[in-house]
Length: 413
Image 1 (cartoon, rainbow, N blue to C red):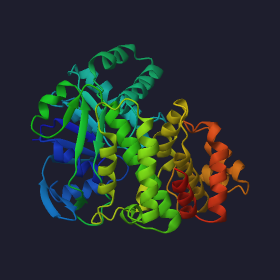
Image 2 (cartoon, helix red, strand yellow; image 1 turned 60 degrees about the horizontal axis):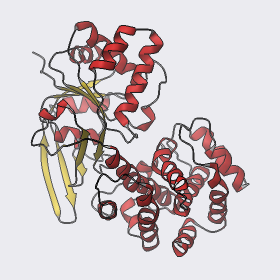
Image 3 (cartoon, rainbow, N blue to C red; image 1 turned 135 degrees about the vertical axis):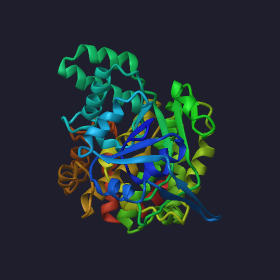
């Protein structure tokens, strides 16, 4: 007899297995969306695995048994639809990365979710929560808009009304450093956080450590900018300077000073609604976590999909500072480093690399910056007022080095 599944999760990566699967105590069916190998290997080991939380003071190992089924979309579609329409299902959660948050045809994540919801609607089952766990501003609500767009295009008014009124989309913020797997066990850090906007789903998380709050936005902004923005900046510095692991980058004396200044002088002031969070203390915690030498988190892993990540991690913060009338020279430097990375790195994992790399390679720095940052596919663009400053920084990198640039910026900050 099939398991009674309360959570359906899309995105069977290492992060899900070290995060949601640790917090959730009910039964999960986890779906691999791109390749079957992860689902197959997990199924072969009885869907049980270990998570090793490690830092400089030691490690703890936890056996995870909450995932009851490992499935592959579309091979296991019949079972996925059976779960999606079951009265036992309480929520669909997602870790599908930033690049999946767009309507790009019937194989896109929003279209697949619309299909699952349509099947649930037809059975008369009750509404559920859909919770995005990706680093996208207002993540679940943004996903809601994409799903409603798909349904509207099909002209199904009854389904549109049902999803609008019965399906809940509480925003959430997730945080745990999980490097790409290199062994059967998942290695991560002791820190683990999940914040969800107030929702009836809270009753399933009593005693788990998941936080429910009226508004996730302050947590989301703090995490996306002070952590993810720093992570991306470190990754591009590391890739250009040949520093393999971000823990080695953030403990380099020049880079460490630059990251601290970037956080405290620009990222913190860019967040005006703090939600009571001590942002400077949070920033210091982030630096300590990233410097954990036991995680061996590769710059190359973090550097992937920069065209999707930089928009909310760096561009948004710089734009907010401009609106506040504050300078953003350290954000500008981070953008210049990314443009240089696009122009010089031979192994770029990014859906827009084929367009960005030739633009970034223009011999004229201002042309390289203007064309790269004006790409039509960007939904959130850097304010063009910064382009000349980015070009000046790019010119300095090309004539000397990234370390020379950030040394200069620290001296002036």
